[in-house]
Image (cartoon, rainbow, N blue to C red; front, side, top):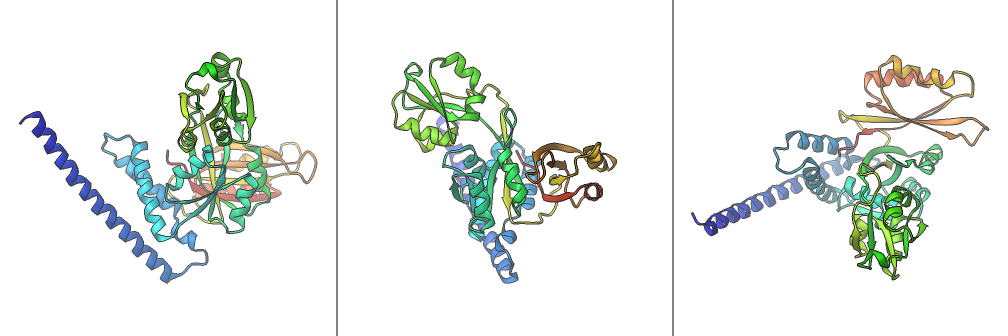
Length: 365
């Protein structure tokens, strides 16, 4: 068989596979529509809670990773199936998601990673507005940043949870790659660099070495930085892939972050009070205790006694009494797991304030 004949044979096989894939995806979409009809007949007090099932999606994606025969990487396979699931969910009921805008931020990218391209996105100018839109039922869910692996926790997000009735419904882990974006083609012509203050901090050493004379100007977001750079000669922005695409800027240098393993964790917030266990879950808890010797030790002892691992603890001023604090805990496992349930019962007895913010699937990377 000649090279041309061999290639033609492979292309014909690809065409056949594509038709089979289209048929199967259409069949899956038809199943989604039938599911929607069944759910509508059953009725629900809050429809979106009945349609969007975070634990089910997490289970499906984990099963795909475990069964992946290659050669596609797990991350690529998950991304493909996420989009199929997103399109099918949109046939059942479109989901409206608020995120910290403007368009082109890393929170925008996190929302797309978690919900897929077929979700309806609403950019908000502040974290407070994201919470308010979900509380007011204008949006079904919101996506907010909670911590960065190099810059630490986002305190404002924690503070909003103290007063908000919303729950944590999921988490997203996003690897942060910063690019130097500009209309210029020569880095020597860059006299100013726009970025969010955290992005400037995360690229400090690279900027010191490569653009030591460029003015660094902190803005409200990297997306706003990209928007500024579009209209100004001699300007560059530090931003990610989505901003590069949206604002049609030239990537003068990619991955300029000082730490290549830079990750940001985002939370999905919503009114969904209970999410069933997915098998690999986290529980987030808000607690406070009186300011007395050994109080925090007594508060956390039930976790150790029940062999429950705590992955994070943060404290914030209570804003009610000077020098008293509320604590945010992330623990491994679902609050309905027997060990976790028993540990939380003991923690509740020691706490003056106790609230489960949510039990939800751990991020599927």
